[in-house]
Image 1 (cartoon, each protein chain N blue to C red):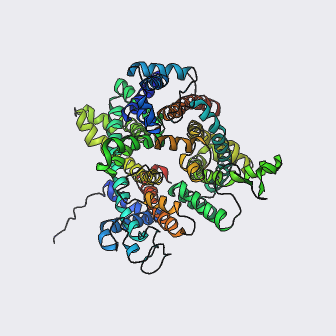
Image 2 (cartoon, chains in turn cyan, yellow; image 1 turned 180 degrees about the vertical axis):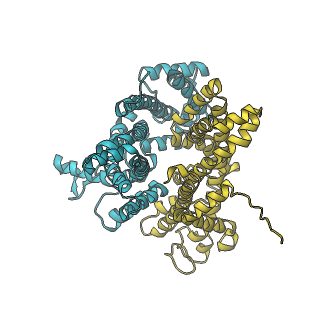
Image 3 (tube, each protein chain N blue to C red; image 1 turned 135 degrees about the vertical axis):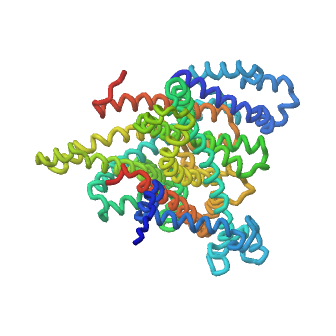
Length: 321
Length: 297
């Protein structure tokens, strides 16, 4: 895991280095810097650009281990501060989506597998194949068009009312904390709906196909023959065997939770890390890109380990060496 | 009395698969949709009334029109005929989908076969290498790379940059799948028999293992084409694509910017993209039913 981390961080670091000189971006933002060589030097020192490449990398690594992600090229604010500000909004959105999509997909997947080729099954599979075939952002735009612009029921962008709270349209300054909460929850509805559908479509397919395979096994026949109620057969005997692939998926999901959903967040102007990342990439803000990418890599590595441990919990046949 | 002896070959693996595929309604629908899109792409110059990205309707005083007979998908406020551009976008989508998938699957096959067949050290090394690509956050790296390469190489390479990036970063999961399949096939009796007969490694790999891995490869290729088309649309939508090629993602971006009062661009292009991806996904499902009999009763 540690060699992996170092390897990937070097690759990403070299990529950033190959992309160009961050100094140019800073100078473009304030050309007068060039007239003052002493100031230019101090800026170089501030970003560590006066050092050699290996030295820059080691400096970055040391700072990263000390939980310091460096400073943004735009305005020089610490990346930690910026990431911290966006982090919880993203996690909130993702957890809501994950909870709903898991609950719904487990229910629908089992239902659909139990009655293969029934009308319910056809409906579930159709909904899920449309879900994996449509661009997530497009679904979001259609929802905005319908629920925000046409019906006017829900806010179309942001996480909080900027000047007025939804739906009473009271000025934010005069709103009570309950009204602020309602406002926030209403902002959450559309983006989490989009993410829920996107995850749901994928999860249902996997749960259904695994369930179909499990339901054909002899031990299910044995469980049924011994007169267990169908609920018990499905949920405690069959579903247990579908948990392993599900753990893999959820593990991957947790790894990507920080990455957020760059596109969905952009469409809904959600003030989260994903949208922030897209903007940083457009502006080539290297410390921000590098910082967020490596946080995700670390989370992926950790999630892999946690998933391996979780396998042993859900499947007693798996032994951890 | 003469007896005519009919020489009959037993049905090949592919003939059996095709017979099974014909029975899958889902697969046939997918094949039909993909066929229609291939037709649109090939005959785009005859179907599209306007040049790609041209603002001709503007000069004809027909900008920002809702769908009508002359402009089935309407026109944008910049005076682009959405139908023509959506037709041209089909070519870009196929180029990205097929091109990137071709690169990815070639890499996945080489790495999966080598790792699975030779095992041990080679397997270990290749799988570590694969894991690096699995751990890298796919979409984010692709955004960064397309931005960097677009600046470094300029717009000269156009969409090819996107094809290369998607191809080079999209193989890891499939390489793992193929490796698993190779591991299974390698232990089957007929491979052992072949080895006892003194066949060389290359003969075993290319004449015996490869044909047995192909069904899986074909199924995942079809699904990967769908994914690549979607990812390219997302990249272009965010403004990281090639600005000089007309793509669906780019049109979706234009449609989103002008969504108020100009809903037709977003809806028509989105449906066009959705149907195309759906076609490849259905085709993949159908192929999977036909080629992997183990998954079906």
